[in-house]
Length: 289
Ligand SMILES: [Zn+2]
Image (cartoon, rainbow, N blue to C red):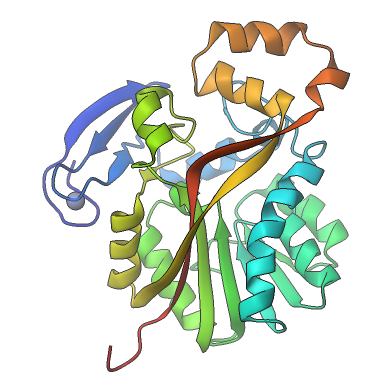
């Protein structure tokens, strides 16, 4: 497998969930070797089980019940947006149930969302007044240069061809707009410490494993320039933490606690300042830069 970014031969890192993960020795980008056809994969991966704790999917334990924690995490990024673009049109790519779109609408933005999951989009459109499209980035129907802010929150690592999607989004963003991407940092202390048990190593839903350098590079290749970075901790329900432990962490204790702890206890939220989540703010490259 050749590196997505620098086209150098990659080396095998490890196998997890039956998928091989490779890393480029030159730039460090990690990548899952997805064996299936991507469009077929999208249909089975992001169904109901993805949002309701199917152990095979390794995603959310209960996306609806965890809404308050998910929104609390989004608010940190949203407050930043309010400072740099106090009004305008926002597009949340990979919006799932539309929580971020709802948050932006509540605060006066003209907000829209896009997702590949039929299950999520049908639910999101109930709370977001039909503002959510079921489409890929390339197939989405929006006017060129019509958004002030485009967000990809915990989505970028799910894309099959993130550079191509960035190029399509570049056309939708106004010249003075901002692109905001939140993803895991494969070079964070926690990622290095946990190795293959790091929670972002969830093939096949995560197809790429970026760090600051590789995320900068894919942005630059798509005509964006990063202008700021920050890290965030996250509020997670105990149920979600145990679900992560039993799936991505491959922990038997996690599985046992997930099975025996009462539901009321599992609804408790904990703040995890893991700092393995990075957020980048980027803008279109200036002609003379
Ligand atoms: Zn590379």
